Length: 122
Image (cartoon, rainbow, N blue to C red):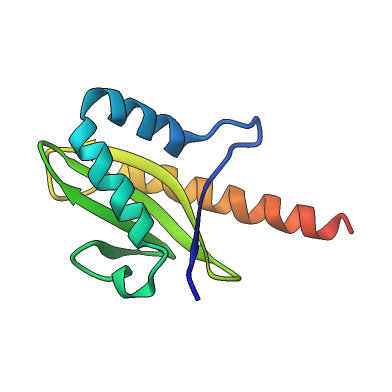
């Protein structure tokens, strides 16, 4: 069985990862192509480890691409073999800035809260 990769949407309907990818596509088409290939590989469990992915802790993982700048998409697992991508970044360093990890964690908590709220409606 394959995993399904989905993008987090805000309560207002925004999609931060799609926005990030749209910007990446126009600014660096080669890195965009590589990141999209990496997201496609996430459907297969054998790619959920290094060098493509790395656990960040607290349920978050990173999809990694090294290019002109390091490009990362932060994501987490949910039930039914689903992966939710919540945040994208580019930076020169190896470490992910703390504020980006906090932003991804906040989006993950928001996704879980809204999923629980939706489930409790019925």
